[in-house]
Length: 237
Image (cartoon, rainbow, N blue to C red; front, side, top):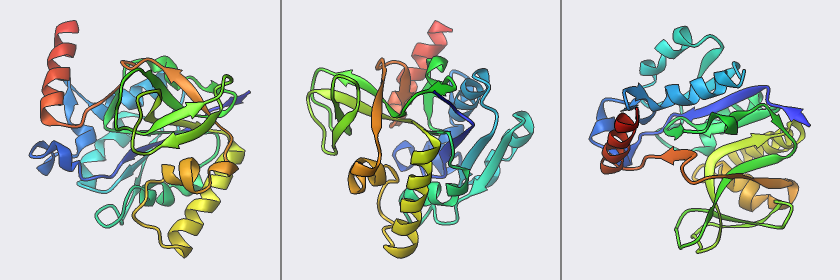
């Protein structure tokens, strides 16, 4: 059994699918039910006593500065490559923070804070079981939950991958090594950081599914979806 020591939150992107809202506001700072999405993530972490939190910023980075004062333990890491390269660059600039670490996106809502509990046994990706086709990344596992493969172009069965993963220290160090090789030597700037573990070096990482329900994490990818989620949560609140 291991315990999460720290968190890395990805928040450097342009949020192009949420324009025009993101012309002036980074997507993680867009409010849902009156609260910036990234604050719901930070508060979920702190509820589980995870207080060493690194936020990777880039686009409109100065707007995140207030979080350092509002939430003790939060620090910002600047990604100077955010406007040039894919999100491999964000984890690359935070690679020295990798240990027993939870990695997640700042532009989502973690509705079930129990997903962020500190105790864990394997390196895992959050996944919700699907029953119909989706073009999201779909993981397939054995009966013990060990991930056997991932479909990049979707499937009609398996586990839909969500942007919440937990990494044991040994796997984190392997991930760090491969990040450096891919970024510094191979110059593979256009890939997702998850490509390293899920595809390019899959055999090096004993990854498992962390089963979740589909409504445990809400990912918002359009202005219309934001409106619907915002209305639903306002009514619920």
